[in-house]
Length: 232
Image (tube, rainbow, N blue to C red; front, side, top):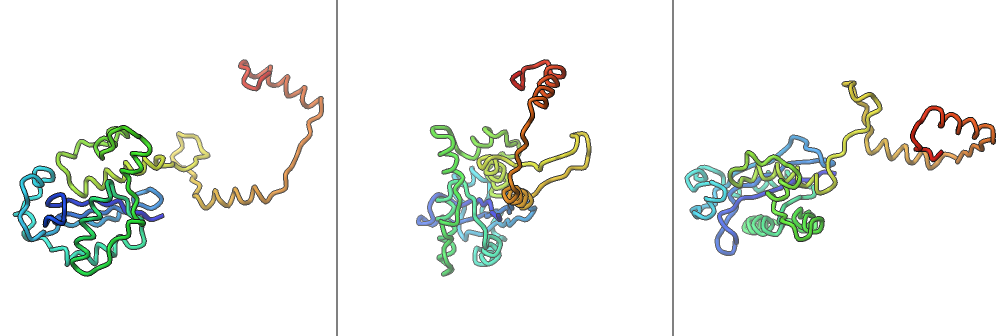
């Protein structure tokens, strides 16, 4: 399953007040694993950066002067997120900004039904607890040492780790070798499905133990196991 973790930085809190997107970051994951593919860009908002916003993300008006306006990155952005579920922490905030930018260009809005809000997931999982991205990173022991200010790309990388934990954590492969061996055998979801399907199709086999076999088994357990694990 292809999903895109996404975050934005803006000039303020509401596009209706003239605030604009200044940074977009997207990180691709497939089956909850990073693929190494990402989309990241800064955007010239064609306006000054308010001091309040600058204190949060550190992106200045001067820094953005030579960056592309949204018109020039829209097609690449939409192509990257196409056919994927979009994971956003506090999705309502980012969606209102992105859809505002798209509406200016006469483009179709992002479908909220195609968006997964990790904040809502966290609130259901940990009701009454702090569920900001920072708080969840601390809960899941995600490294925050590089996060001095907000930044879309770093926050998206953190969101990937938090989202994977919220959905049950990364699932390792099944190994059939000693843990000291370097080589590992892993079973894919498709292979597990095939095995389960095969097991269901096989006829049931019942093996009746004779009284003599049962007696020998009980004697073996008593002789070789000091604990009472088997109930004898």
